[in-house]
Length: 111
Length: 112
Image (cartoon, rainbow over all chains, first blue to last red; front, side, top):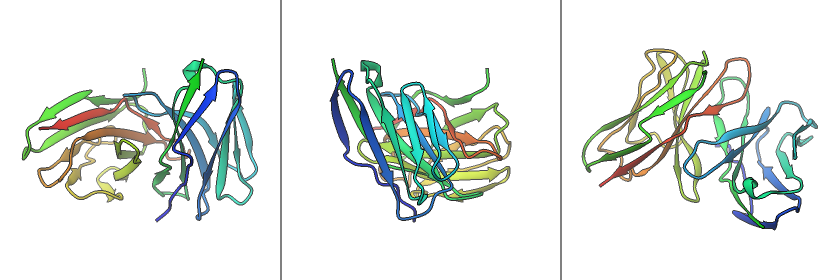
């Protein structure tokens, strides 16, 4: 089945630093989604990408849909303590397809 | 307010008992999903439904059952056949014309 690969499992950065996360797959995806999850809560949608090559920003977050349609990245600039959480990539391969998730990256931000 | 409501937030059950988790949405979304989350495992798909009265198994459907009698409701039953039911369960929904999924707050099920 389709799999989305996120690594490393954890990342540790200093407050104010930028951080970039990748998500890769051996399958082609038509839509890429990036979510953030706080402890004990449901994931919240950060950015949705619909076209290959698309670059979208949401405040300090920027995400890109890879031109091969098999990868995406999320960049967080000038990190702050509330950026702590688990970041998931997810994707749809097409109409009526299921939503597939990566295993997530736990981000820690040191003050 | 529009959204997805999962209830209860915390649920405790004795081993061998079936338990049903509620998921309701008032977003008029066609598709609904159930995911299970365990530490370090990410989100694994249990069942999903694209339309009323139809649903498909996900990657880990064994020991679970669902129904989709109404567009706004997609309850999940964790049966006694599920060998390791203690987990965080998440429900999501998505509209027909946009590939975006929105999540409820989750239900943490503990079986003792």
